[in-house]
Length: 117
Image 1 (spheres, helix red, strand yellow):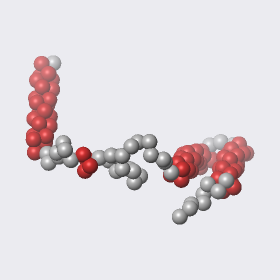
Image 2 (tube, helix red, strand yellow):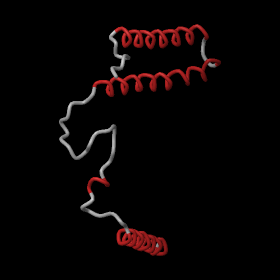
Image 3 (tube, one colour):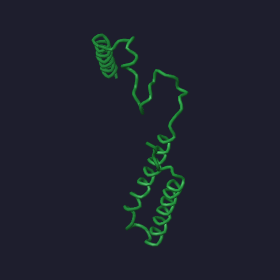
Image 4 (cartoon, one colour):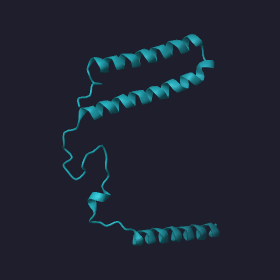
């Protein structure tokens, strides 16, 4: 037990030493805020956070999430094809596909997929 405590203390000393050395030789400066700021979606993080947000980014995100969830539902269904009743499998896959097709039709009908350049 004592040897494990000594080993843990040695590891903490080594880690602390490495962190201090990396802070000392780091080239980052505190007054260089613009270079250290994250860059996401073309927004300037130095400006006001209450800027108008483009609805097209939101729509594309929602469409991506819908199809991401669809993949996570359909892939297991392919794997369990041999394990369950074929009628139940066919009905569930058909209902999932109908829901997705209705969603795409709704987005197309509402002109959400048309980008204005």
